[in-house]
Image (cartoon, rainbow, N blue to C red):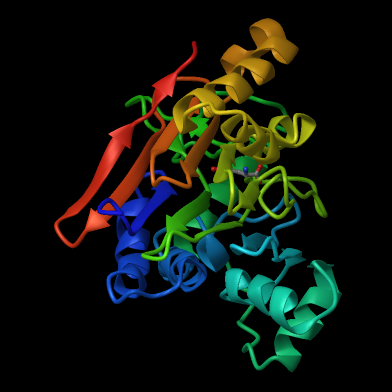
Length: 310
Ligand code: SD4
């Protein structure tokens, strides 16, 4: 197929992440390697919101969640993982080297160390330290949309900034390789100032991420609790199996969230991106402001504004 390979990923950080994935895809590499290498770029970025540079939980600790899924329906995930730089790679090792799918907390960290991942220092990035100390002044723990990063974020992700953009802390990526195989990945520091031990959708297979090589792939970002409640990514993939385009499949899932929440939906952001077997991609979100990055050649890596419901 002439539109293959192709990679898509969430938010503007997706541009750099796509470049990492493209190095694999352009050489005929496997989608699974692409989605791992791609989001590792973001996990490495110090000024960013994903990985160890992300915002901490309420108690001041950065806890990371990640999941990965391949073209055979194999999957792996880690959550509540501390002091490890590349949770996505640990998730892949869980998938490939253990009889399990999901490891959390200390057990996940122990496994990472046994696999040779270095234990990083327990420190907040400069931005995260600043945001956390601002947040501590009020320690407000309720959904709020219009909170600036500089004023401290509320425990609600992602936050809308006054310029209309969204602050976020997750990257999700989907790729289809030259052979037409699909894979996906998702990695996050989770919701800023979450309760200790809180997991969102990102490490949950079927919620934050789902891949079915016959139907399509989907990854979610935004308020994870809402994604979990509708088993979002699995739902989107099942809609694609029924014949909906990726965009329409995402739209139907977003509408389900809005229907559940009524007027409260105005205070939240959730977005899905999806990719089908033919290499057709699409996205949909609750509110204006979500973008995703699409890369289909060395010179064609661009941001697309997703359509929105409200
Ligand atoms: C979570 N879905 O932990 C993630 C947050 C997110 O951009 O996507 N932020 O709920």
